[in-house]
Length: 191
Image (tube, rainbow, N blue to C red; front, side, top):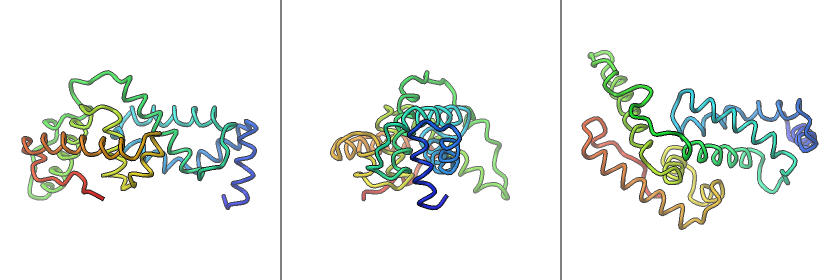
């Protein structure tokens, strides 16, 4: 919805108008889904976290003061719900799709299969990182967000955020050097 219409909807959301909340959240669903999927990878976990994000946003709407853009405020909620989910998620012995389950490449599918193997392997390694490092790294290297923005989204200082990105990248690069699927893959650059 246009600006004035969105402002009216947000005001109704503050009053706990469920229909208004559903309209506002559905208009931001794609952005929030992209953030969550990039943080945890595709699958049921992402869907559950997105659903939990919507519930948390509905609960929090009365406290929205408009000091940040609505999309930033909702992204902050998505990031915090994701961090909580990563902290409470039991470690999995095997990813939803193990790299070994990806079919052998043929000439026609070689690039696609290799890219899929890299993505699966990257998510397996990301699963091993502490949640705050994982989130900071993904928001920085994959989402392309600035350190200042990540600090605001996670409620951390810029220095803590920079440190988390550094240590996550270092761990990922160390693993990538040893992994034939990821060897040579760029894992984010300094900004």
